[in-house]
Length: 167
Image (tube, rainbow, N blue to C red; front, side):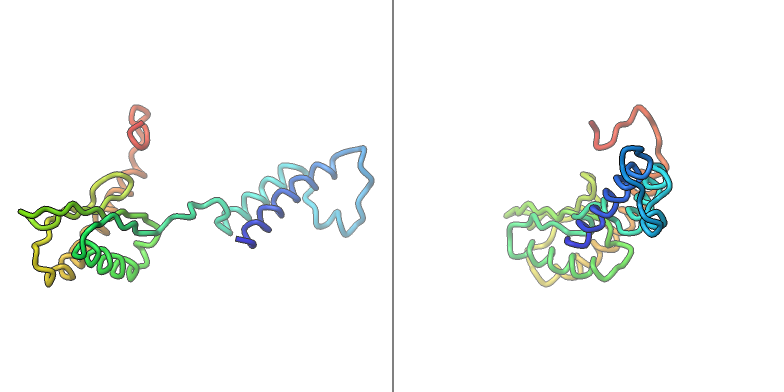
């Protein structure tokens, strides 16, 4: 956090120093200071953009987590197996998922996994907890496939009538 804060200060300082160089009221900086400062304000903006892209300064800090919304022991086991297997895949890391559970005395536990408010996986777990690990492994494979399909669709769909997040 300290590193990100320092980089943000560095970006702000370079933008301010660019304004100070162009200001006639300020005293002239030394030759060494002129070399370290950008020539104009637009150059400072370009440098700040490069720093932002390279450091990920303004990226989503909650990206890549799996949220647990389960309530039973079997649901917690499903979440634990699912999240452990999910972390094994490097391409799955940037996506944030939520694992939900609705227990039922008649059907066992209903579990589903959501990404960006859309269900990527939905199944009923039998009351026998022995099949939970296998179900979670199958769930990870299906969720990766469905999340990738959803992200490709989101990137290539550009319709002004469709607002993001259904707003």
